[in-house]
Length: 377
Image: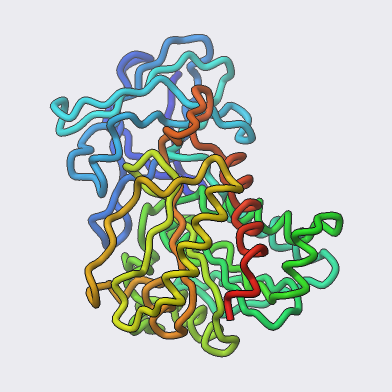
């Protein structure tokens, strides 16, 4: 018998109908106390060797309906290697329908919006990196559901660099990026990592929204709050995750920061800028241009032609983290965006954008930071 289930870490799907392998109709559950929905993650069982057609309906009202055209779902039979499935989108069918076709070669196949990064893997990562020489791990605070907000500190240099991810929990590529960056930072044989650790103290928060991650949310925490709109005045009742991280940033100071995200619609890797903050300086603009130029040279996956339009002078949204940090600390603060689809600058027909490429980008972003450290303060 063919079954669909999603009662697991980051699972999200509702079954509308299953009449056979060619008629499976599903829908995505909204984030708790929110209208956001786009992330899905479910397991298909009992269809080995059968041509399966899965339709996910009612997507016209999803958070980013422009993200569905050209998108391909990811699938895995071992939850280790994720490949792209044959996927199409019809905005006119059943209020927007994503159709996924596959012929499973195993009894169970997992299907998701992007390769998931589980809370269990998060704990394994923190334990593994925390056991490396010279690494400190502490808990900055707790989420609304009581989960720890872990910080990993590496290096003992005077510059204070902050890297943080998964304010939007469905953007799981951000934590794959973190895994790649952390693995490089603790590599004793990597000269760039050794230089970076000597010149800077790195504060790394791999997952700022563990509640949303476990609940299968796209964008919000347990209270339905978008954490990346809380940085002007976070509170213990709405956004304790932001409150504890911002308090730690104030305590350490911030010379550079990167907030790691994923973008549903744009098939490129890019950096969202902070030009519209009220107190923008020539030095900040020069640092931003310098970092982008270095990353373009280092990583073929990064580009500067496509991205979000900059805010007008003095019109930056200061509830967003990188705008708030650039304004408060006068530092270089950037939002890195990776695609849910593929990177059209360097497409991969099998995997599209993937965990492996996210990890590689994390390593490359560190190299760009290392090159320009002397200019940050």
